[in-house]
Length: 551
Image 1 (tube, helix red, strand yellow):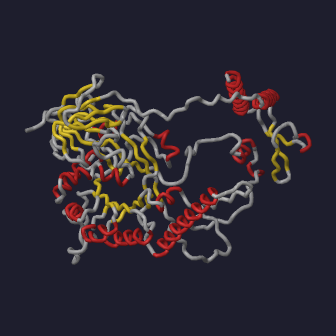
Image 2 (cartoon, rainbow, N blue to C red):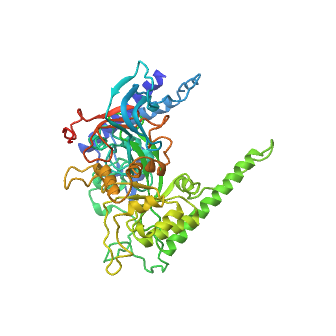
């Protein structure tokens, strides 16, 4: 194994040496083009014919020798067999996240799903909640945090997270691992207001890669540009067949433009991933990718777009039916029979299949009455789960929302002016949270902005999440429902209710220790635990001012 690694390093060094020699000769002007007969160009370099003339690049012998030697070493070392590692014996599943055992004693625990436990003891170990109740025996190895008069709640979850914990613009889960930044200071601002997890929107599109800058150059991939730099007479370069351009817009113009129907707007989706704000710890930071089938607003509006959407859903269901038949045929396959061919997947994505199977929700923004009713009708017709953002005029569609079972994501401080003369059937309504709670419609709460902002007006960025829940209480919601909108409801929408959103044995140890009621503007987060590790301490993290609690 060591020999193979040494050979690999030697190959890299030789390749770098050849490249350095080539660039050095290029910089010194020793690589000059010269017209030579075509028959003599076989070993002198690469030949390109331009308008009946052969142009070659004379490469020094030293570069050729080094290049040949590098290729020889590559071919020889490539044939050197690399010993395969022996199969591991007694393989076990990956261990749970290790965290020191911690006991919080004497606080009032707001479990969210099982009421409030007074004078409770909460035990955290290996990233999980292992005990909660009154009078629990605390093992000797546990670190005890005395918290009489304090309040313990599950960590808050935001469904809109941006520029926090993620650097750059990853276009999918494949690039997310390299983009996560556990030392982003914005995470501490969010932890200081109780946010321990969030649904981060990734950039739309397919698997990108390194974005190329204008000044980038790649040798061997810029044939025309390299040739132009080496050719004295630029008129001798043939760049291909000329194409007529439109004098107005500069685009290629055809003699006869084909007359076709206007194509429908493509259904554009956005990628999401749930991350934890585990400041200082990368392990356990990524919770789950692809938690929504998020459709850009407007992609499902119009008859033609909705027709194409129905066709895509139908194709996905037909594929799943064929796949089930294929799996059944494999189970009944007898010896000697030909193996059946799997059905073609085509353009159907894994997210689309997850949506059709009911594993994830379709998420889109719908503000007006017409948009809400259109999305609800489509979801009921095609039988998939729905999550609507905004719903500013949702107070006018309460029966439809309740019947469809859709979840909604609201920002209680959002306002929409009513149309003149239609004040009773348009615009926003401050008591929307009360109406949603009365009909049993699950709602989550998000702030006005998805990122942390240190300028402009205060109370309008990600750190105002708990403040939005207080405005929901002003709009008629109970404090328990407002707390659910920050915890268990978003966890259910993300499909993570078995791990997040409440204080229960077996769930992730994402816990907040507060110095007062969770929805009181005077309350501070004293300690925050993510995966059982303490990631925020109010007295140690210099992100929020430390003031004594007013009476």
